[in-house]
Image 1 (cartoon, one colour):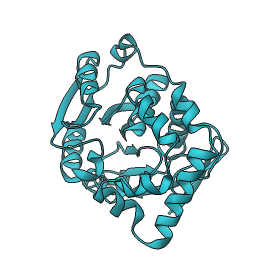
Image 2: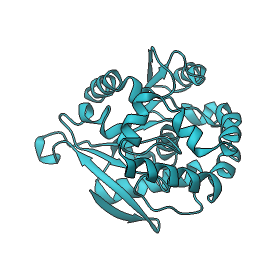
Image 3: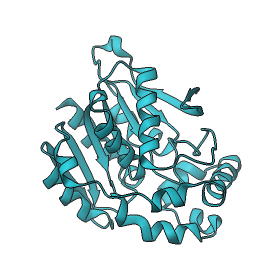
Length: 257
């Protein structure tokens, strides 16, 4: 376990896999989703498969997991700035960026704003802003305990096993919903225009769940990106946990290209 201060925020960072001396010089950076999520969903899921022959860098987003709880900066652009700072601090770049849900939006925005840092993108269940705003409004008025209880079993196991871990998750969720700008920041997000997406000329692996509300976004991104391919798995939004083995193998194969 290590911590880095980036953009005046203390971030929790973990690494898996061999170093650059192994002959694989392109690391992968993996960003998780919002609210109840943290790097554990990758660490105990798809990341070890991606890390079989390359360095993988995982981190807790600001306000999540063991990273510092700060009141502001939960918009996608700031998340992308955080990720770019992490890449600059730990790698020479360009690198592979992988994200799930909100983390996929962060990875995408990082690639758009800092194209020199990015060799390829792996986007798992990227929602694109307007498609999730109604859900975010309902989350903002929900009871954190009910939200945690409603998580898929696999995600509960990865994030909430043990009394201390569950208590930390509840505390983090309450802070994000009640004391941070997260919900307001997301409500203000604008969609990414297709002409912006078309300018991102790097390989992109899209992975979506057949039963996810985000599923139509996969088709849109497939058409918009110049170099994209799409895998659709039998599952919902939390593919990084529900179908972690398949997601890991798809991503590992994609990075081998």
